[in-house]
Length: 389
Ligand SMILES: [Fe+2]
Image 1 (cartoon, protein in one colour):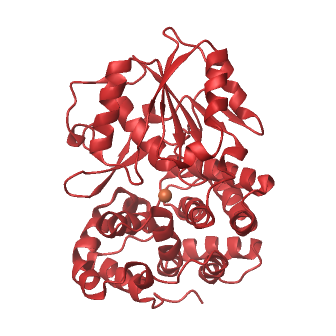
Image 2 (tube, rainbow, N blue to C red):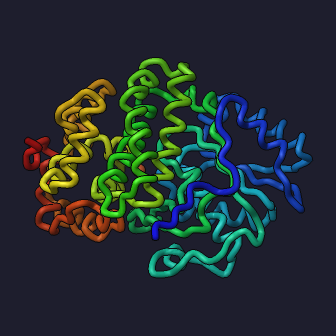
């Protein structure tokens, strides 16, 4: 039996998708809009969102200031705002960080008796939601797929460790994919978030829990990233490329939330938490090394080979490196972190963290801690792991 849940109540896509907000229902008709910093204001879409909410007779307020890699402190502040405003809809308008933070705030709004991040971390389960509010996500970047996933990542305010938290109730009720809202994302951010999509898709394809439905979604997402990401990077206002990437992000999200990820994410979570490397950039750099490591597994090797053929390449790791080059992403972590001694000293800790990360469980090959150390060292200094040939 392979049960699968693809999205919440509605997935709305195509131009003018935002108009769907006029159909929002609610007993209180109150929405809290959760956003990040200034970039969303520059898109020019907030006035449209406000106008549609007014048309639906909703009153609204904002929670602003969700930072990249949101901390538990931000989640607590957001939950306080929710408790004071008592909305029946939470509308997250932003990238993965904003949507993730909003999901976490939602839990603490529904259960104010929860006080700490540990209260919602495994082995604790996410309790039933929607007694007070439903959630609508409007992604402004093509990356996390959080608008359709049952998970989020929050950074512990004190330890800086990133915690991935999952629960079926966390799939947002409505996901609205409005391509134009992503048009003003700057090139470097477009590149990094787009490579996050590719990583979700390729990790889902070789996951030990992979299945035919997730494969169809993941393969389409990965093919579209190869085809459209360089275009969106060079020409941000190209709405066709932006829409393809926004859908790719959503497809990859549907795939990985059902079959999970692999050790690219395990290592990216560890390195991102300790050295502040943006998630998508870390994934982009780590991905080819992990493809090479995973190619020691015959099944994974064959999946990579047949996908590589579809993008006109023989070797998938090399094809990813060529794509990274087109996006001006470095080949290894050293030029991003610039702290050779500090990084080398941190490798054992990073290897331990990556080994314990939830994404490791579904990697086609599960590395030992010693193997993790080798892979992480190679990712930093830029030496190839294993051989795909
Ligand atoms: Fe990711």
